[in-house]
Structures are given as C-alpha cells and as structure tokens.
Length: 113
Length: 113
Image (cartoon, rainbow over all chains, first blue to last red; front, side, top):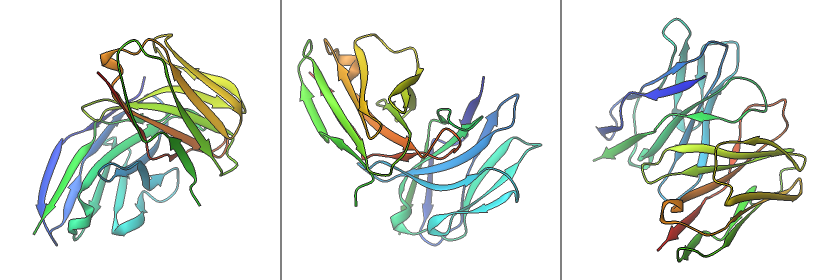
C-alpha cells in the first residue's frame, strides 16, 4: 500500500522569505506525485506534478518541487513567498493512471508581513 | 466557464435526514470521484466512476450511494445522516483512465446537527 507523509503540519513564514514544504512517500512500485493547494473555503488546485523525466518540476505561482527517488521525497519550494500564498498544501501520489489519489494530511502555510 | 461544479455549496441538516449532493463537469472527462475531507482536513477517496461505471468503492457506509446518470454527472446521496458525516465533500474529474491529475470542484460543506 502507498502512503504519504507531510512532515510539517504548520509552517509560518514571513513575506518574501523562502519556504520548503516537505513530503515523503512510501510505495513498493513507481509513483506519480502531485502538489495541490487549497485556499480558504475553496477547492483544490493543482500546483505541479511529476510523472517522469526531469526530477525538478516547475508549477504555477512560482512553486517548484524536486523528486528524489532515493529519499522517496517530493519537497515543494518557493524562493520568496507572498501573503497570498497562505493556504493549505497537499502532497498526493498515484501509482497508475486512473487510480485515486492518496493524500498526505496537509501543511498549513501561513505567510505574515 | 466552471469546470467542475457542485451544488449545494453549504448544506445544514438534521440527523436522520436524507440528502443529495450534485456534481457536474463540463470538461468532457471520463472519470469522476468523490472525496471526503474531515475536520482535520484529511482527504480520502470514497468512490470513482468511469463512463458511468463504478470502479472504486472504498470502505464507506452503505448509507452513501453514488449515482452517475451520465459521464458528466456524479451525484452523492446520503441516507440517515449522522453527526460523523459532517465534512467537506469534493467532487473531482480526470480526463481518462490513462491520465493522472484530477480537477476538483469547490466542495460542499455538510453540517449535520
């Protein structure tokens, strides 16, 4: 069975600081990895995805993530955050096309001025 | 322009009642899902339909019954509502069983009193 662990439940940062949200996964087969963002009282929006190829993937809103197979990690980074990045961030995996996503428990990113 | 829509957005009802949540996607996608997000924001798959056929049915009480009248619609009917059913329910869709990422609706916040 697959599982996803988001190592930090809350990450408070100041505006314009860099941020890293950590995600580790467990799977005996190859996985496909995703980061979703949920703004307050809204649905989930896809930030970025890793399916194959380059291990560094770039997403929307200046976010990027790096797939590290040996460490089974897919950490999300942004070099300079904005107040508007305050949201809940979810890491998710899928083991093959068509299957449901398995989500981590989420990380609350709080950006203050 | 709404891709995945859900109605209602908020639903407050009493224990023992029966209620339905509707989901529609105008993306032409083949596969649709229902996820439940609990009070701790944990997201878990409930059901999945592909071209009106049930393909995923997780361990969910049989008080929950999904219905897909056509591939653009996936409704969720809940009988005999309980306090523990209070959650946010998200509908999602995926282009086909050959693809990976999912597109989420805005969610329906169900409160059972």
